[in-house]
Amino acid sequence: MSLGKINDTDDEAGSVVGWGRVKQFVQKLGKTPHSQNLSLCHCDLTATDVVELATLLPFLAQLEVMDLSWNDLVGGSLKALTVHLQHVGKLRVLKLCSCRLTNQDLTALGEALDCIPLIEVLDLSWNVGVGAGNFRHFTEHLQPESTLKELRLVDCQLSETDITALSEALPMLSSLEELDLSNNNLSIKGMENFTSSLGSTPQLKTLKLSMCGLSKDSISVLGQALRSVPALEHINLSCNKEAGGGLTMLSTNLALLRHLRSLDMHLCCLTKEDVLALVQVASYLKELRELDLSSNKSVGETLQNLLQTLPLSQITKLPLNNCALSTHACHALESACQSGVLSHLKQLDLSYNGSVGDGGWMSLFGKAAALKGLEELDVSLRPSASLSVSPWLPALLEALPQLSSLTRLSLQHWALSSAEIEKMEKILRKKNVILECDRLATSTPKAAG
Image (cartoon, rainbow, N blue to C red; front, top):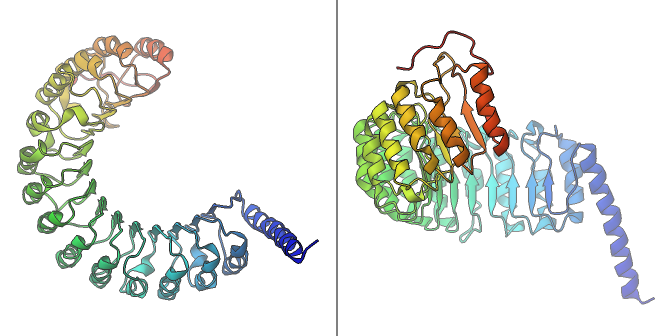
């Protein structure tokens, strides 16, 4: 046997032994070993475990995904791992959510970026240590033309200093496609700093700023910046309760986003003027597939206007829960159903709209058979309600056999008799549809108002 053969054999034997160590380590933590995907989240990893994992990296040369999230004790010991990342040069995804990362960890991670040149996804969410002015310890190590495509910093208590560090780093992240800063309080000055550099990320497709305390002025600042990111496809501005009144300033620039596929502004205290401003530009949003304006009371009185301008034939998801819908609004939705333009709609959430009234539900279900693509329908009431389904149930029962794609129907908190439930279940059983409802009427049903 030649020397080359001996060396090959030794290498193979070493690999087998090394992989055995990897399997033993991973299985000890209750996980399944995989050469390309190492998930050790929720494993109560200790600093000693991190050191041992580092010694195993030479046997994980094919590793592409590593998830160490939700291990509090990883914080402060990350360098023991990062100094060995050169052994996993194919790593594309690294998740370190809720690991109590420190500024030393951020420095170590930044210094190790050269060792993982193919990294595309980095998730540092739920680490308060990333904020408080510490984020620069990571960003100062970023190099031009970084391969990073997705950066998630959810609930990291980012300060203005951290946002400034991010804005200064964005020119290094020209390949960035997704940025999630949700659950961080962004001041108006922070938004100005952040948006001033958005033009450095021309490939940005997804921007998430949910629950960031955005004011209407912050929304206006963002609107002006949208001109510099025409590739945006997904925008999430939900749960910003001070944003009401800002959509009038945002909407003009929304019309420039010809690739926009989803817009989420649920629970934003939108005004009637906000929704009408969206109405003015809705016809330009030819690629829009999902629009979430739920938990905005003003939608109830403006829904008809919105339905007249949205590219409804493309819409697949239209949550309208908790929107104070009226009978008139439901009639408008029924007209849209009847015309056939909602045939691609997959999810329709009309829950928490007790104000619709029997007439509204009857008109809706009378035309619901046209919703050929509908998979999920939710018309649940608030837990405190207990209205009777009897006036409109026949219309629903007649429509159900024609909803060929339906997989889930939710009627929570409506008062149904055992006979009504039996009728519905008989139809749904044939279609294998999941029914969610209170099993029996528990109180005397009230008439719907």
